Amino acid sequence: MVENNKAVEIINLEKSYGSLKAVAGISFYVKKGQIFTLLGPNGAGKTTIIEILEGLKEKDAGKIKFFGETVAKISRKEKEEIGVLLQKNNYIEKIKVKEIIKMFSSFYKKSLSTADILKKIALEDKKDSFVEDISGGQQQRLSIGLALINDPKILYLDEPTTGLDPQARRKLWGLIKDLKKAGKTIFLTTHYMEEAEKLSDYVYIMDQGKIIADGSPEKLIDNLGQENVIVFEKTGFTDSAIDELRETYPGLKITESEISIYVKDLSHSLTELINWAGEKEIKIDNLKIRRPNLEDVFIELTGKGLRD
Image (cartoon, rainbow, N blue to C red; front, side, top):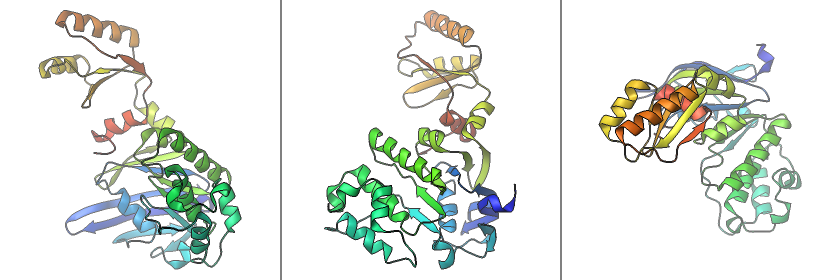
């Protein structure tokens, strides 16, 4: 990997809050023009890393390289090349879409025109609408537009589709893919595993302040070593029945509502499961068979869901 192909790199980054080591000597880099996703359960340390890379916090130790240049911290110079979408925005009341874009443009030395931004986020027909009157999906597209005003080299998207309905979420995915095609480097965090799987070129998974796995979504799923997942409702299964089932399927995973069994030989495993349930007089409801996904990898590695 040549240095010129790296947008952002951190080397042995550390950050502590009192006795808590939020970031414990982490190293990784983001390639230019890549959609890079950092995943981790709540409290893993990912928010701290992002805030350091956005210039909101300072590191305790380690090295940061910003487009090949070593920097002590992300200062005003670097911030001119950064676009940030925060998890939540509180907009001024009674401000129009075109007015807030013009206002944000005044914050930077260089900026794209209001017309360019409106076109990129497909809100030309909403330019005279008050921000509070447009839909949640349109507000989120506007937020990305505000992050693009300075034509940044790298865009940090912190949970960009939280709270959106499935249709609005997929529209935003299309916008993010278009930004990548336009050459933007995108640093993504999300609580939606499907989102990470659909959008990411490369994923780092962290837990308790450390990186525990990395790779493309396809590679991480392949490394799980399973070809099929049998899923069914947990209702009707006693603790003793689950313990007995776990003896046969050590990789069994349980949520509040479902039981998942990871198998290679689907035909044999499915027959064995149905015969066992018949002998125990246990009804298996809503049985489904699917391929493993990134969420399975995450649960296997961390032992918890993304929102835990």
